[in-house]
Image (tube, rainbow, N blue to C red):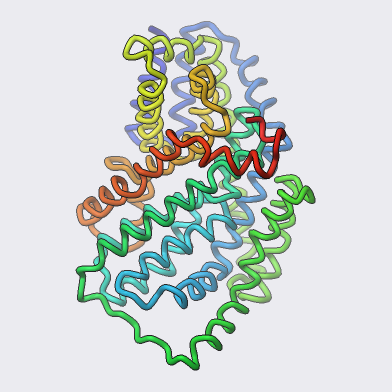
Length: 436
C-alpha cells in the first residue's frame, strides 16, 4: 500500500507539471519516511551509480548536439536532401523527416532535432503554403527519429541501466528507425497530395541539376562526415562510445565555427553553458531516479507487476502488449531520459522472464517512448512543434493520429513481433559480443 501511494504521488506531481526530479523526489521522501529506509544509504547508491565510464558519453553527445544545433550544420543537410526530393507536392514534409533522421544520427537527441531541423524546414513549408497543422505534426513526429537512429542518447542510458552493450543497443534501433522514417515520409506525402494550394518548385534544367548537386554535396560533406566518424569509429573498434563522442565534439567545433560559420567563439561559449545546464539537470534527475528505482527493486515492484499481469493473462504476447501501453503512457508524461531510466530497471527483468532478449527490448522501448512524446494528451514534442510552427493544437491532432496509426504503430508491431529487425544487425556486426 505504501509503495502504491508513493507511485500515485509521483504520478500526480508529474501530471500537475512538477519537474521530473522534484516529482520523484517528493515520492522518494514519502517512501523513505513511510518505509523506514536510510536516506544516506540511498543517496550514496544514487551517486555511486552515476560514476560510470559509459555515462560519460552522454554529456559529450549533449555538447556535440548543442554545437550542431546552433552551428548551421542542419541547413546544409536540408539543402542536400531537398535537392533530391524537394520538387514534388508534399515533398518538403519528406525532407523534414529524412533530414531529422540524418541529424539524429549526428546528435542523438530528439529535442535538438526538433528545434534545429524544424526551425529550418518549417518556415520553408509555411512559405510554400503547407497547412500549419500538418507541418507541426510532421515536425513533431520526425523529431523522435533522433532517439532511434544511432548514436542515441537514450540507448546509452538503457545500456548503462540494463548492463548491456552500448554498441548492440545502438544497432538494435537502426532498422526500426529506418522503417519509421520511410513510413512517416509516405504517410506525410499522401496527406498533402490533395492540397493543391502548395507551391511546387520548378524542376532545374538538365544541365544545372548535376553541378548544383556537386555544390550542395561539397557544402554538406563536413556534416555528413560526422556520423562516419562516430559510427565508423565505434563499430570499427577504434573508439569507445565515450571516445567517439569526444572526437565528434572536437571535430564539430572547427566545422561550425570556420566552415559553416554558424557560431563564433562567443556563441560557442554560450552553447557550452547551455549544454552544462542540461547535463547538470540530467545527472541530478539520474541520481534521483536511481534512488527511486532502488526502492522499487528492494520492494520487489517488478515481481508485483508480473503477478498483476499474470492475473490478466498468462500469454507472453498479451503481457508484452500491456507493457507497451504502460511505456507509451510513461513517454507521454515524462521526457525520454527519465522514461528510459525508470522503465529499464523495472521492466527489463519482466521482459527477460517472458523470454525477450534485452537487445530486442531496447528497440521496443525506444519506439514506445518515441511514440509517447507525440501521443496526446501530453505529447511534449507535439506542443513544442506547435509553438515552433505557430499552429493551433487542434489542427495538428488529425495528422498526428494518422502518423501514429499508419507509421508509429506498424513500426512498433513489427519491432515486437519480428525480433530479427532489432537483433540481426547486432548479431551480424558484434557476433557473440552482442549478448543475444
